[in-house]
Length: 330
Ligand SMILES: Cc1ncc(COP(=O)(O)O)c(C=O)c1O
Image 1: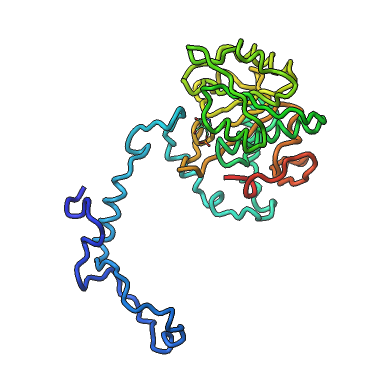
Image 2: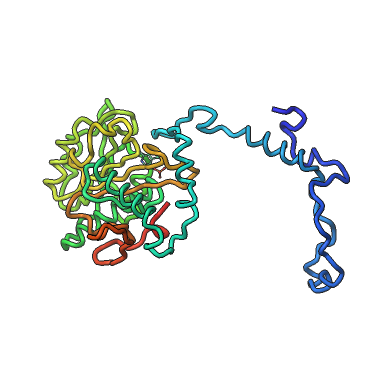
């Protein structure tokens, strides 16, 4: 850290007459005369006068003030901010991904579509689900999408009285928020002193007005929910679906699968368990998976593989939710 530059505003480094670059003087009297006088400034802008090395050193020193995963560990709520191997960033930055236009003809982006489709399939295998969409922009957006799928499922059966979502009191705030945004009513279920869902408190909440139960495992108190199998049986018995919030999937990745535990719909925060970057509210990615029978409700557009092995972007509405993100998501 260079003391000469550290902790100073760039205005404090200003020295009268210094310049970083010499630009051609294009402001001919004719050009100025063409601008209405009301729009002309009366005084020169108060910009700092600095040479190029001062600008470079100033901003380089400032960038060293950032605390991030490259400079140290940081937790964010209950979720895991993991280190992204640099090779993954490099691959994501290949021009064959980064320079594509989202509306480019599918025939010219077969490699990218294959990578996208393969990821949909890999996540389905990892989650024990039948199909995944990569469209949602973050975990919270995935929750909203998943709950919209659940709503669409109940509505498709003409079961419009299912308007409640049961959310444990340990849940992340996005769970009740997403339920409310999806137009559903939040019903809280208590936790036991050990931090896991109180099954006896859940029992009386289950009836034919419940659309879904949301669970996070391990939950936001850091505890593994040991009653998931029994809870899933009770919830299904009541005609409702099980939603898995995959923000904390890391500790069971490759060992246990939400689909095998009885969850019907789930999201995975790719910026937590996997390698997409996590910014303040984005760019993240919250793919949503569904069990067999719910695929038709997933959002469009989707990447599919044709019988001849080529890849296409499908956008046939049918029972789908329609679009929930710009084109195919982040
Ligand atoms: C348990 C849980 N659910 C949902 C979310 C929301 O995820 P995102 O930040 O990707 O919207 C988070 C993290 O913030 C979380 O920890």
